Length: 227
Image 1: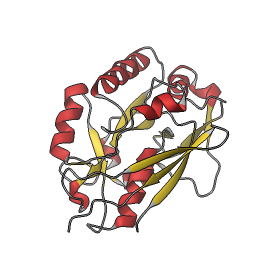
Image 2 (image 1 turned 60 degrees about the horizontal axis):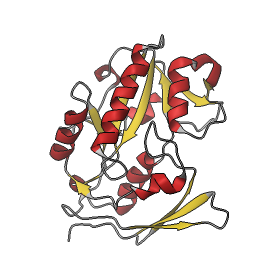
Image 3 (image 1 turned 180 degrees about the vertical axis):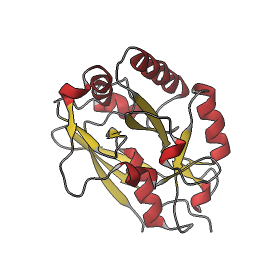
Image 4 (image 1 turned 90 degrees about the vertical axis):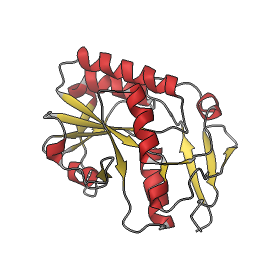
């Protein structure tokens, strides 16, 4: 597999910032291959009281599985589930993930409804994809007792430590001022060397603005697989 293309519509790469596409993509760097130890230190330096989880693959060096993991957390889509496993979908009009997050905490019943698609993923589907820093499979019992769970993506290549810290403070304030009993579950979206990728390798990306300026084509180059 040599290349993957993705069309991004009104993408928002941080929780709180929802400016223009060009502004958001300006800080986007070629994703670099990371290791969990370094990512744990980076994350704990910003959110010392939170845990982060990682996606796993069954076969090391499987390009298709690696790209699937990368695209799974590349989207800014919020994933919200009840403790019984039901996924909830946003019924508002805002494309901004920050606005959707605010609505989830402040007016959940007015702006979110149970998803009805037959093929929609449930809470167990998401949990089954995740492992902790030691590679242990995540179980529902490992998460805090809550009525709802919000799975939020983060990574090193699309933003900065400063922005991640701002997001952390902002989410903490939302939780403190909300009546919703909810837990945030952080999923890392970086490329991992344990997937069979070259340490410090990079996935080259190229952006091309479409004619009407409402979307971007993103072309991804070859994965830096270990030889």
